[in-house]
Structures are given as C-alpha cells and as structure tokens.
Image 1 (cartoon, rainbow, N blue to C red):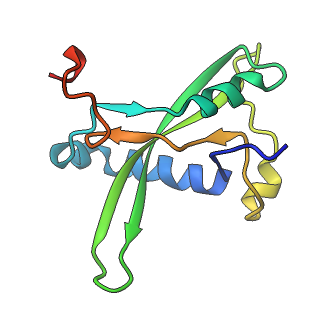
Image 2 (image 1 turned 90 degrees about the vertical axis):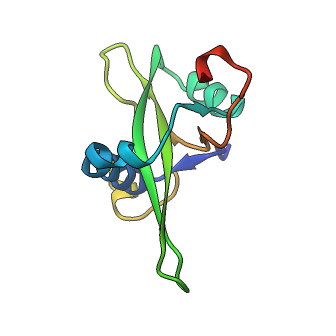
Image 3 (image 1 turned 120 degrees about the vertical axis):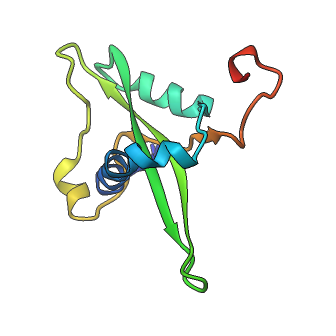
Length: 124
C-alpha cells in the first residue's frame, strides 16, 4: 500500500539542515507557533510494525520562484516512527539517498501561522 504524505530521506535531510543553518536568524523573522498534523500521517506512522513512539524533526522547506528568484520558507515538522531501541525507523535509506521513492518520513504539516486556531489559548 502506498503511504500518503511521505517524503524522501534526501528531502528530510535538506529541510533539517536548513532548519539548523537558519534557526538562529530564522526565528527573528518568522513566527511559527505550532503545526497542524493530518490524522492520516499519525495513523500511518503508528500502524508501522514495531513503532513504540514517534519522533518529530524540525525543518525548513526553501522554495525559489523561478521567475522572480524570490525565496520563500515554510516550516516543516517531519514525523518518523521510533522502535523499542529508541531508533528512528527509516526503512529505505540507501534507496532514498539515491533519489528513490518516499520513505517512512511523514510530512504534510502546515505551520501556524497561517494554519492556526486564533481562539486557542495556546496561540495568544
């Protein structure tokens, strides 16, 4: 069964590196407060054999507009299953490092803002 909302290890590594490289100045200009996580992402990661918990990594997706050359950034929360030995359950590392298909790394999260509950006491 094809899983929904998975990204490649190559993409996840790039986003995580972007977060680490940009984080010190990035937060001065961006107000990420939370993430909206689709139910399907949680269901699929929890349904994997051997998952005892999940781990979330922070990342930044960088997009350059080919016409204007302007760069936009979107915060990402990447979710992976964790096994009983506290190891990330990323099953196809070799395939994905070569640019293969999706891995067991989930991301269709949307950052807050813009995907916020303005009436939430956690958002004030």
